[in-house]
Image 1 (tube, rainbow, N blue to C red):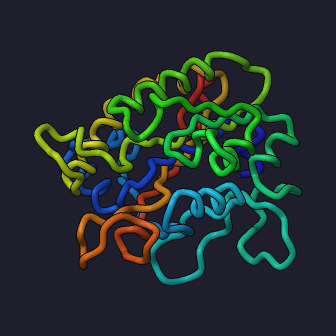
Image 2 (tube, helix red, strand yellow):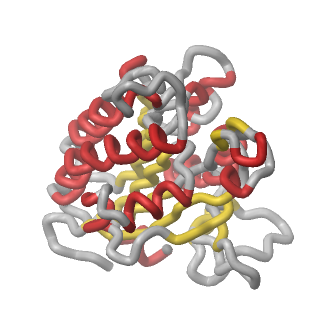
Length: 269
């Protein structure tokens, strides 16, 4: 990551609440064609460090991304905030002398941008200002939130506008995609309650909006190292459970991917 950060911008795209099983089924059946082209090998199965948005993002911003869902020692972390006794950072880890990686990027002169989605990013109250407050620039509007059926289009259009701006500094762009979060029944015609089927329909909606963001990335001078992941899943009645902030496999198991989108210079690594 030290090498990548010298030549690449970074995108952290968190598909809030996306379940691994749903993401994988939609990819396998060809119902998310944009993600299929972007991720020809599909999604990696990982375990989230948190069972709901606040906990997971606090961990992400400290460099604790989801870990591989298999026994054995996890690979060294991509990013880390230096602290005594850490055993999860290696030679390739981008380490910051800062309490979180966002503050670390800012200290190195990066432009850090947050485009919020769910309520923990709405900046309407003290708690809703904690996570976006880490960034140099943070944006949230009602049209980015969970009740707006076209939230991803609005979020990605703003991202494209911002990416077309300043080019002198490297950019760390974070987007919290809200469409998968409840309520999502509006993505399934005739549905009155949320379900696995409406969750999948929400993912198909997001997939259809992704080209706006991907075209904007491709127009940039620098290539972009992209982290695509979920912060947690959610239960729709499995074993009697509903929602998240609970310990169930459909909540802890999340999709994860790393991909590089070339910039105008054509660089990929």
